[in-house]
Amino acid sequence: MALLLFASCAADKTAPVSYKLWYNWPERFLPDFSTLGEPDVQGEKRNLDLMDIVDTMNHYAALFETTLKVPATEEYTFNITTDDGSRFYIDGELLIENDGAHRPIQKFCTKTLEKGKHELKLEFFDYDKLQTLEFLYSTPTIAERRFNDRIEQEQDRLTSRKGFVKPQVKEAWKRFAAWKGDDEVLVFPILTDIHSNNNYQYKHIGYAAVAGKMFGADFMALLGDIGLNSIPTTLDKGEARKMIDNTLEQMHKWKGMWIFAPGNHDWDGGEGEWLTEEYLTDTFQRPWEPRAGGNLHLTGKTYGWYDIPGKGFRIVFLNSCCTRTLGGTYYLIDEEEEVWLKEILDATPEGMHVIVLAHFMPDPMGRWQTNMNLNYLKENNARVMKVLSDYAAKGILVGMFTGDSHVNDYDRTDGVNYYISQGYGWNGPEMLLPTNKHAYFDYRQCLCIDVVAVKPAKREVHTFRIGAGGEEYDYHFEY
Image 1 (cartoon, rainbow, N blue to C red):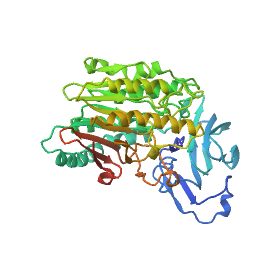
Image 2: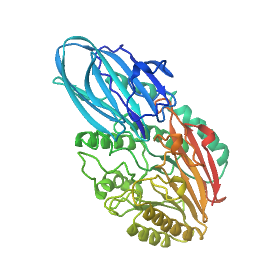
Image 3: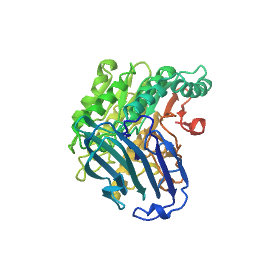
Image 4: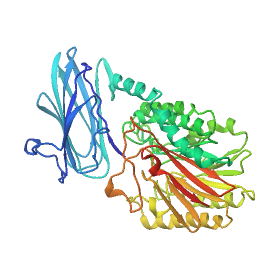
């Protein structure tokens, strides 16, 4: 996911941040900005990020400048993590040098700032793939922070107004109502790849609850990558705990069932310590047992199944990011789980319709190119898809629904419907496969939720996009 965050540390709430951005910077090092000529994009912002600057995919350089008004002389500590390179200046003095194309690297600097105005300048460039910039600061009287509190409050007020969530939900609901007619349906919203890392995106879980209520959802699906293993949550137990609490608070805004399938960004939280399968089960799956009335079956290994009362549907949810294989490799439904999956499908009562949920998509349309053993991955995916195709012969497998790839896509292979929901994660054009679609949007202005509706009597499935991309991102298929 592309993530560029810069917390405004100015005491003057009106101080703007000016930015200049140059596209098509091909090098693996920062440019001499004085030689670049006129920027392709420039302007002023309330906070220093890229969320409302268009077309920031890869290969660009950016210059940010602002004035910091220091109310009293204090020692300031700055903590900046970037992928790729950056330099940070105060009053023209270079304090952090972190140039070059690299993975996220964290740098610190400390400087006593006298009362008065100080000029801050940040140089940044992105070469390819991940884009990360985390800016934190603290003083003896200010706890370390990332966001300007006022900006967070402004965003909260913006998205809490009636004109933010409900109109987007209602627009999709009208399409749903016209398609549904008088037919009985099963409905569930998919929320995936929030990647909030304690940023504002986590509140979209609560916004999805609004959709669940309007659509009359049978359950809510959270398909992973809430974002526990990103800086700073992966380095700080307090940040990780705060993020978990924030996520659960939003989930509890929905009064019904949640189905949680963990993602690869949900494991490594809190000073580099691996979260256990039991912990993720206890935290994100077991709290809904009282609402399930004995119909939720957990294995303690973050996979299980849920039989929806009175609907004739079995929801099988998987851990597609196992850490027990190949020294902790992600993106696997490991062999132990493959055996379990076949057994639970074979044991499904006759006539029940089955939906499989996971984070990672085994169909090649969704495969990330990772540095793991690709041959093993392909063999693993083929075995999982064989289990599903064998079961699909019974005619009651609705399909497999996932997130992870940050795209929308659909494929039918050997009688199995495979569907990917985009979510909030970033994806550059050079990373898309030929059939992939990705809606670019600002999460502060737009939702990105797919609602899945199934008509068992007619064996039809229709998805309805709330927000990003709108009706263009609806899909329809049969099973």
